[in-house]
Length: 504
Image (tube, rainbow, N blue to C red; front, side, top):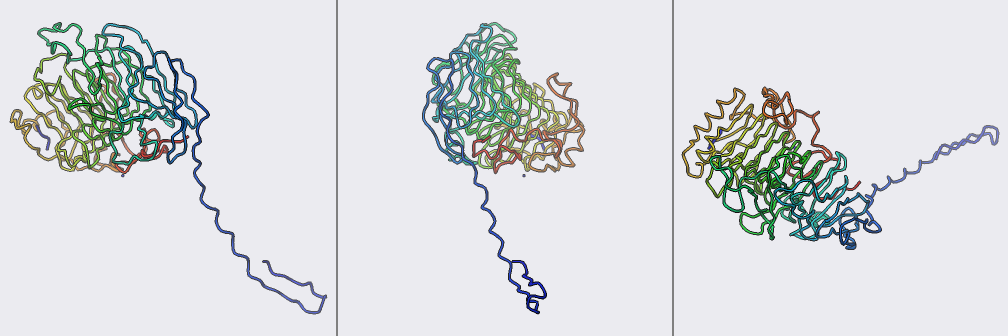
């Protein structure tokens, strides 16, 4: 119900009249060779030269289970176009907060500074408070490849101290841009009735100790590119409700690329989008300690081919959706938060949670071609009449769902209203579905028996598919090699376990 994986010796005849045959036992076979010893990485000779003031700091070496590496610390400010090349035996470190450029302001155009990271590079947070932020009007270009992803991780991960339960060992990656946001730092919210109350509506980054602004009026703005990237063991909180997650975006525009992205064991959300316009394909999020995907502050987000898997010991919702702010009630604020997710598989395992999706504050929710494996928990929770009135849409969505606790004590909408709305949207929707997933997230017979909708009818961003769920069958391997494996879920990745940094 839906509710509010030695030869014989022969003497020639005639030499003595007798033929003597001496039989000896063959020598024992030699012992098998010892198993090959993994070749440990040795440190690079030094750090490459970059253009930014101060350059890279040679911080000596660091050793872990994969070998010894040269450590090259980034400057606190990347103030010129720079590239971080892949060099064998070398890691890049964030000694604290590292800024890509400075804030260019609400109405700026173009890109001031670009930091480009090469495939195969590993960047780690040198402290628990380290994070990387591409400020408004600047870009992070982190384009890995299927066999050489870019990895952002923690110092403990390099040292071999991280486990499949570790979280919150450094900050994370932040992209900020100049697309519209709904929560204005000054003056509250714009509404349909008074859209220009805050003509320069901009918001302040959560989790930062210094004022860091984002937002603007360019919905097509670009904050760079994230392709074939892993972010591991991230997230920290400076104050209640002010956290950094694995990937944080603020006011990024549709010019920003997100393609093949993995979040692993964030202490807060796997990813959170504050306003802006976010388009993502091929997303893997594992082990977030709070929400797997959090969307709010007027974000317009489209996501397709999404695998979300919780740890048993942590995790809240797989989707949390707010418009514009859970602590406020202006459901008329613009832009309205809109989240559309197609071809997804969500696996709810947390013992502390009881729903896959929680929506509140008047956002628009659209779910299509999805599978929710809840082990008889709740699939959809709608908290308030404003969100119900925004008319959530569900198309070819199935799950094994039971009734939930009351929606914050509210009875409007009632559980029955939410259930009826879910069933009314599509004859393929089913909240009493028998899950036949294999390997945790791969469709089985029942999933592939559901007729999908054409997701391209929702947005030109979406691809047309012939199946529901994130992964059609065993031949569909888009998630392999650029991801990492864990006891929570294995992706059969040749890049190995999340507890080790990859070696090429």
